[in-house]
Image (cartoon, rainbow, N blue to C red; front, top):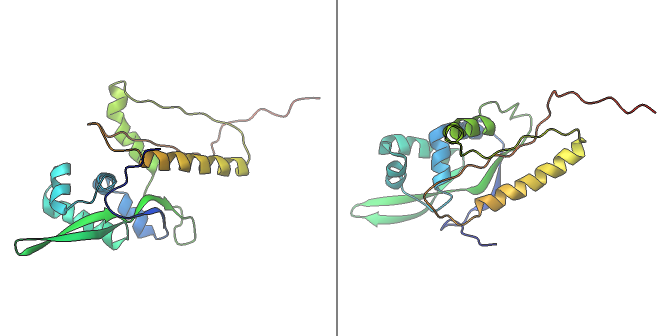
Length: 185
């Protein structure tokens, strides 16, 4: 499979173990910044131009991501009397590590982000999606999640091209849907 990684080294996965890390991901501008850095390292000026926001605003959000371990300076260059910093992600994929410190991690919900981002595509008839329910064991759900994580990693590694950025949301969750009783003998 073709691999078009960013122009800097980064880990494949990073477990988010602190509530502040999850909260840092909860802002739409920060998720946009992280998405842009999938392609290559960038300066605050480049990020500000891409998201059409003031440099001071973008610098604030870059700082929040940096202090929470989601971004780092991957290289610098001297431009006149100023050292310009290029920021990169610390990992290709971030995931919430369940644990006592994390609680229920209500500050960030991938599906809420996906719903907000996909509304325009839905209205334009350009949203592709499926939802299914199946009664399966917790072990089967865990195995299926592992397969979905592999698919997300494959999506992340696709060579960047074209003019449109596509979203990709996957998940598995317990529902309150009813189940048929066992068959009668």
